[in-house]
Image (tube, rainbow over all chains, first blue to last red; front, top):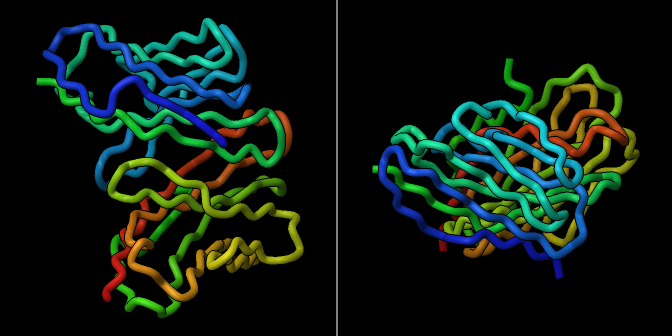
Length: 113
Length: 117
């Protein structure tokens, strides 16, 4: 069965802290994605990766960075957390084959105080 | 301009009735794919159904069907015989391009469906 896991369901951090959100998939998928979800705005793509050590900016990369050292793991990093990064963060993966449907993790609700 | 538009922020449906969730899209790419996802209150996004731009028939998956009207650029989700467990947010999404696009999806803002007993 398809499985995407995220390291935490809920996280509370202080302004200025460095925050790591981890995502692991066990489906041998090439592509991985990080989104943030805010009420009324839908899902917005932060970064994606289509191969190990490869990364591409999405629509809202500012304030974030990513790391993909292994195929199954894609990390989102908030270098210096700010209150406007309080949000739900969703990780997804997809095979490198048509039709590229994405499979999502359970999400991490991050609160920055 | 929005690429995916879901005009219904919220909808109610009576249990056991059918419901249609609207989605219109905007693309000039002849090759694209359309997806619907369900997000229950638990937060996880669940893939429901897919329609390719070249598919001749409307996609169906159990109680879910996609009413694909290419000329109108609409891809409405139809849920037949609604169940209480269908109460959730529903997102329409589009992937532009064929192979090699790495599968980036563009999401709409969602429709919150509430099923009444």
